Image (cartoon, rainbow, N blue to C red):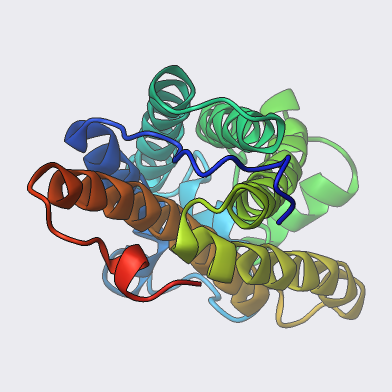
Length: 243
């Protein structure tokens, strides 16, 4: 980290409710874990995660509702961070893409699949003949954009953390999560070609994004905790154990 890139000043802190919203966003994005109880008939190995929220599935509002909650809360976290934290180019880019991730998650909830191709043969035939709604077709766009924006957000926030000496958790884990997400995203293309393992790969992808949101929440919490300790004259964890 060059002296002209970081002057020792921290990024600042966000209110506790922003951190709480980031945690809730991570939890709500993992609604696919409820499939064991609510949607056991869907193929978890080869089926799309998006099939859980297909319009004709009985519990689709729960799954799409989770995406909607995550999208809205992530946008709030992004805006709150941009408003309260110190603005540096990489950090600003990261928070902006986190907000775009939220927008795309809302898009996933707004444009669900019509039906579940892996469960219903007639649905797969309609999909192949392109006899599906705009929502069904556009869902692939929003789902891809979620991954792209999530990867860029994690990577740029991680690079900001390393360059400016901020957010140790993001500096250590953010880029690894972004790399893992990229690898599994590319693996999705291979799984689609082979026609198997797509469900498992997608579920791992979503889990990584949930971990990314939790890492962001922890980083924001750590800064708030250290600021509170500094106000009481207690050395922070970062001062005790430098990177």
